[in-house]
Length: 319
Image (cartoon, rainbow, N blue to C red; front, top):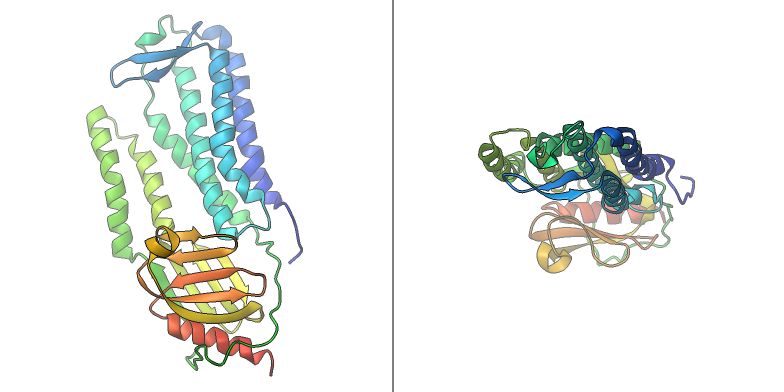
């Protein structure tokens, strides 16, 4: 794979789109300025508006928030040498925030066109959920276009004879993380606050926001790991998100891992430079070192077989 500093797709989705949304909020405000009150409502309590700002000040505030919070996250997608899976997560999350901020801003401006007293308006709560879903969907579309520009470095030598060896038939696959039942429970737990909020407001549109959050959380704890003759690969969100060739493997070992103690939590984690973990349970894990300096830890009951197979494949290159 050609060495690159910037992923073109990542630059378009992660930098250009947030910038266009930020600029668009300023342009839209200028277009509608003659039809907006001198000061528009920008914040509401549960019953009424309690925060006001000039349309221009609001436009620049929204633009800044879009770039700092949404664009700041999604811009990571443009960093070609960074881990592909991490870039995808950041893009989906970042554009979800961009979509939410942009949609809410457009809706609140539209709600106050030709209004004399902005204190009588209400926050269009539906725009929160719809915006998060639109942004998340756009982020997922962008995530599918990202490419892995990681530089492959071939390992030399062979793993220590003391490390596991396995003659297990390949491929060896495992669904790492929450089961379908566990994922459904996690999604339902995430949706409960959305249901309660919807009932209290008498509107079901806020469920969209919590549905988008539930999908993101479930994606963070479900992975498909496969070791075959070519090496090791990880599939996430229906996409191949991580892949190392067998000739990149220096060695693989088995260790007992506690997610919170060793990596600070569950899911895709990073602890120090080039030290990554897909840690979703306490117990055995395969710990793989690569010639590039990357280290990958994956918790799985099949850790012994995977480590043994990778060491066997790595040793075969010297034969």
